[in-house]
Image: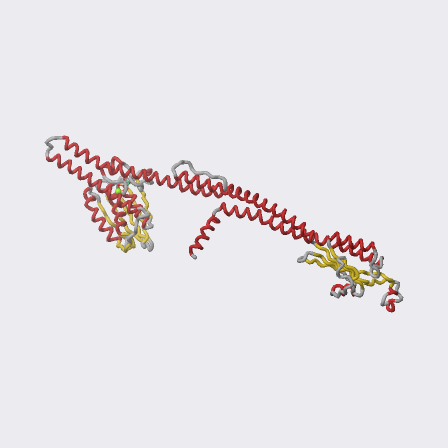
Length: 495
Ligand SMILES: Nc1ncnc2c1ncn2[C@@H]1O[C@H](COP(=O)(O)OP(=O)(O)O)[C@@H](O)[C@H]1O
Ligand SMILES: [Mg+2]
């Protein structure tokens, strides 16, 4: 049962194709009117032919009825003229005429079988009484039946009601008999059959023509969509770098526009990925190269004094530390990438956290005689990811110390309102040139490569910081003046 339903649905799947739908619609639009027209025309032909035949025969019957009186046929059936007329009528329409006199006796039957019999059919009696004739079409047996009164106009005085109408000059119609006629409609039906056959042939021809038209139309109308598919798969296979263009329809243009936007976005992503990979390789290579140079120069000399070994080994250890830091930064950055980062939210005492971080960094600050102060305007607890929050603060304060002057100062200010808390890291350092401000959050960007080299760093710190802030749905701002100092402001929702 289930399989059956599935099969049907699978077969119906073809209806989901635009081509199939266009084909079906065009085909129906083409074929339905021709079928309707055929039936309409054939039906109306039959009606019209029957009514023409009826009035033709009726007219002739009226003439014959008059002649019957003129030739007194009702009392004497020997008239040649009438016989000829009756003969002609029955031959012409393949019909039968029965003439009945006022005693309901059949005095003439063109078939010659019922003469002398008495007929008491309702129509005959009725017609005899009131002189009203008529006709009816019997479709099933294919004939038309006529009841025609045979009427004689006599002066009123001679009529049966002479006493009543005696003083009137008028003539009165008296029914002397009735003619019962039936004519066959076989010839009409035969014509109808021929017509119907011809119409059917026409219709079948139309069917083929419309089929072909529908097929052609369906494939022409859906061509542009196939072109879209083709163009897109060419891009997929790396055929072309050009934007796709299928301007045939507004719809295809929209699809293609959207696709091109996606394409250019992907190209940007791809470029930045390549840039990133080459930057990472370069950054990772630099310390290794240094280590190699240091090691080689030691190996190149013989009898190297122990102090020199020590000195070089200290440098090598520094380079390894640097490598380690780069790798650590890379790892935190990868973890921070929006699509893979998971937030480990807990309620954190921001004051306490800041204190801990500052305590950890104080030794570095002291080395350069830099004052490190924490100014808390209120107690703040917030729902944050503690590890990421630590990264944010550590990076900002570290920078403020690193890019500071001897005996400079770093101030961390914590404040909050009912929705956000803000952390400001203000330093009295070297500042950031204005045209560099927009780049500092880029991965590996460093304002002064040569100078930064001796300070140490990867250029990843602010990229990591910004990602961490954004993951908290916060914002980060910077204001700086070269030679005077820099202030970073981080604003993060409390929950
Ligand atoms: N407080 C600051 N004062 C001056 N320059 C800064 C400050 N913070 C960052 N910068 C500049 O922005 C660059 C990028 O910072 P960051 O991403 O932390 O990388 P890194 O510290 O590893 O060089 C730094 O190299 C530095 O030139
Ligand atoms: Mg840094």
